[in-house]
Length: 296
Length: 299
Image 1: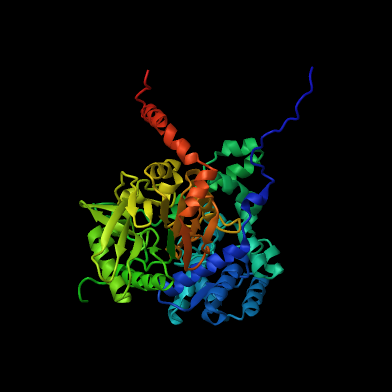
Image 2: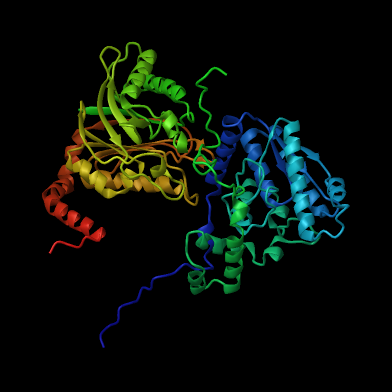
């Protein structure tokens, strides 16, 4: 047998290769700052924004970006604790607010939530969590109206894709800088922006129920979920991912959550009657406002 | 001979034709001050890009746009010398809306001359794009004569298909001016992914056909979608002569010297090779098209 050639083997995507999620945090920061300035001050008539600051990494990053885009004096951080919220959450939120020098207000939602649930003593944790999330949405919009400001959302792409949020609650604000960034990418951005490590490194929690963590609720670690989402969203099948070495149980959880929550990423289904149905046939961008053709 | 080009990397005012016309006048004045002969504006520069069903409300016939551009130019430069302009706009043509770009010569003294209108051939209708729903498809990759030499225009996805540049080159184009409204995707590198990809395409076209290639891209945001910028002017040997930022407006000014064409063509005469083989390739191409359509091959 003659001399055998060295073999160069082709590769497949590697579940351990997290570099596919890498972002250039400096470029991304510039981009999101420009996006916020444009959405808030150019396409809408505002100078001030309202951000619900929970003590978690998503709202911390959002507050940082808003402070850079609009000046800290034009950012109102709203802390909205419930009586069972973790004291750490409130402290971490304050850490972010003081670190940025933004304005702040604390609105305790306990009375409002408890008042609503007084006649529903048997409400499940899920229902109670939804009421809290929607109460925070009401507070944010009300504070926005009070300060002639616009609420800025903090939801990331991972929770949006997994449906891990309250419909018309966390997702309600009309401007969202993080909605196309996976949790792993938000963390990378947080470290670039100088968000306190105590906020970046702690286990993410919706903090609706004491001791709750996102990853326990979801059933998959964010790092793994993000890798799986990265490939699933490009159109690769769950079977291919398992073939590449992804954990079958994790892939199943992520795929099931995505497929069961498409409705959450859409506006309500509206019965179509005419040939000018809004959003079906009559399509105009949100910020399209041509000069009036007729005197108004 | 030299062509001094000014490429306006701008953020149009969304849906406001009059405001964008006024902006055009300001840009023309600056281009004249810079001693430029040609001013290029991006794709859909007179309205913005993602207009969905509102394209019908901002579309204008090319002749109307020409007259409006000329009026704006004369208002901004009352004693202005002739200035060539290339402007992207939604065009109303034979009762259809097209994504078009016109090339014209404007002057303070003479009537404006419309030299060419290119109607975008490849309408992206995937992912974030939905063009074919709202505009009609153009059918020609033309080339036309200007006072600086034979020229062709390509709009955005037109550039991503290598055969369009080949057709333009075969038609004798020495300048291929491209315009785009390209939403940024991919933030892992130094610049958004599509900015890097565009530069690869421009350099590849310039080197293969030994032509000057320019790319006038827009910036700014529309409903969360940020346009990538990264305008560029590329010499016939692939050298980058000017390059715009990824964020922010800029006027790129470069001098394109026609002597560079002959140097590049002498060093790498791929264009001559293409012209010689083009007849055979045309037959092959027609054959491949029939095959792709399931009509069988020629026996």
